[in-house]
Each structure stands twice: as structure tokens, then as C-alpha cells.
Length: 93
Image (cartoon, rainbow, N blue to C red; front, side, top):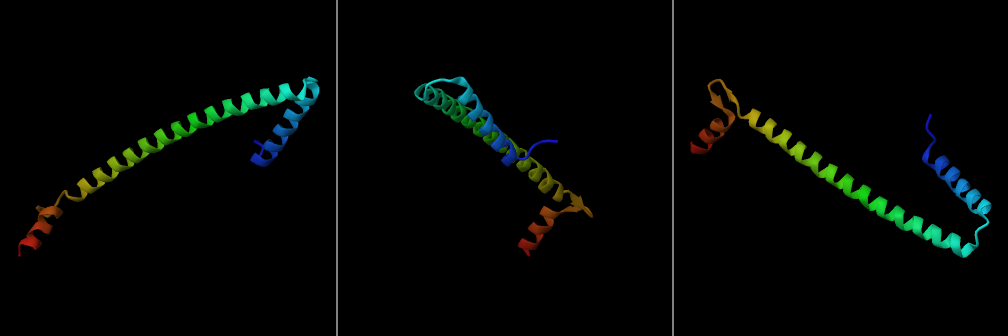
């Protein structure tokens, strides 16, 4: 079973605090380390956003192709005349 986001977040914070306390490093060094981690996390987040955006664009393209194929199938001939031909005949009269 997977933890919920809130419980996992709380546990993560507690683990980081425990590591900081156990490290016995001076606060200024901890600050630099945490800043580096924040920067790396921001880069990873931007990479994930770009991947999600690319996937979203690909999904939109696929959906567009599906809709185009469905629209084309709507113009298949029925009773000897296609829907498109029927619409053109109505406009001509």
C-alpha cells in the first residue's frame, strides 16, 4: 500500500530533519547543501514539465487524427450518396 501525499511529505520532512541533526554540520554548510538540492529539484521539475507538455502535445495530435478519421468515416457513402454529396445537393437547390 502506498502512503498518501500528505503522510509521505511529513515523513520526508522528518527524515531530512533527522539527517540534518545527525550530520553535525554547521548551519551555513547545511544551507548551501539545501540550496543546491533546491536548484537540482527545480531543474528536475522543469524537465518533468517539458516531458508532460511533449506527451500532452502528442496526445492532442493523436486525438486530432482520431477525430479526422471519424469525420472522414461520416462521409462514407450511404444509399449510393455520401453525406457530403447530400449537403452539396441541398445547397444547389
